[in-house]
Image 1 (cartoon, helix red, strand yellow):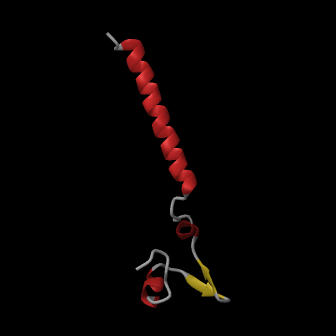
Image 2: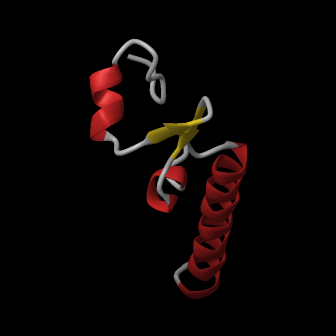
Length: 66
């Protein structure tokens, strides 16, 4: 089942506590925040990992190089 697709399984929609008003799905604030991470999250992860590696390399060269 595709994440977020509720067309074929109305019983699942009832479990998720969503309601329909005027042909629109209305969700609670908690449900609305549960989105999939987009490219900005992946970029943040890649940049922070690169910076962590760079900082550890500098510390190693300054203190532990023999």
